[in-house]
Length: 178
Image 1 (spheres, rainbow, N blue to C red):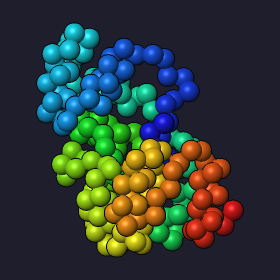
Image 2 (image 1 turned 90 degrees about the vertical axis):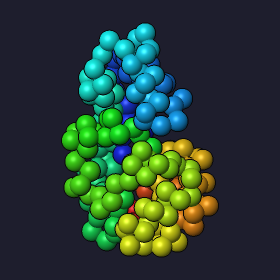
Image 3 (image 1 turned 120 degrees about the horizontal axis):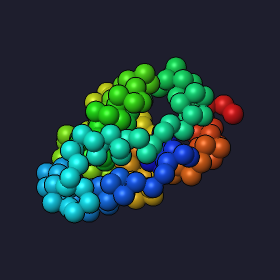
């Protein structure tokens, strides 16, 4: 799962390049280290960064119910933002494939602000860019530590487990009617 917006595509077939690159990214401190490691890794060094990035992006697809049903409802009443811990190398391809601008007012990428979730400062930066106080924000993520980071920043954090539970959580906060 990649948060409440994207998931591994059902038809994804194992790709050693993608899996190796994602493992390297999870172990890297920053984009520079990520790129250097890709360029020296036996599996990934023979591939251009652009190809690796595109292959990573092709692994993921939208959670259609979220995009087709929930986001349009939320956009009618609320400002929406994304906090992404991904690498800047894949970012343009994810943005091209998913048209985040359709629903999201703010898109914060950790590599652009040199902070990552669960650091409370990245949530504060996001709320400021949206013209809101953290206490006015609800943050949804599929990783508990990131939800705790949002709570520590003053937001209301919700742990995404599945679409139906998310609807129930948002309904209990009176954000949507189910």
